[in-house]
Length: 113
Length: 115
Image 1: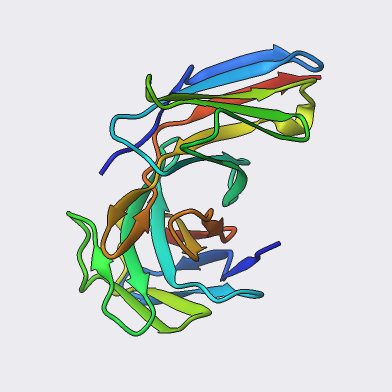
Image 2: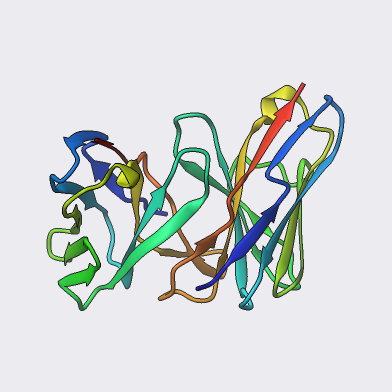
């Protein structure tokens, strides 16, 4: 199995600033997925980027993928207090007849109003 | 978008009780459902993978007789924590997937507290 490792583990910024989180993984992938978890809730899917894509946008989110370095980054622009959450990257791996996700410790983002 | 409904959201019960948690995909058919456990300030730990109509595959260290998983249809999977004890208290989250190049859709989790 493999899991993404997020960096930094914690990030505190002022509202309106940009937040950048990084992810590293170990083996080859078909895609990499980013999720958000608000405190005490389930995970929400943010973006899936395929291995042949280098960059993907969704609203204020921008994800990059560098398969040669086995790394990805998530940029949140013009952050809002509502963006406060933990963010996880997840590279799917094949197991148990399906593609599983294993999660690292995530990046805990705090956006201060 | 794809919605996964998980019930109940919170359970408080006495030690020795068995607790059933349901996970339903409301507007899509899930080929695979996953069960995770999350302790406070920890990441999600995959407990088991469940394919419709077949036995669940448990991760190492997860007792299959303790955590019974049933995946009777493409829209419903259940996790039963049998004879729960205080150390089973945790946040349990399910997710549903439709393929390798598709995201998983998560339920809102069940907070289980065993007294």
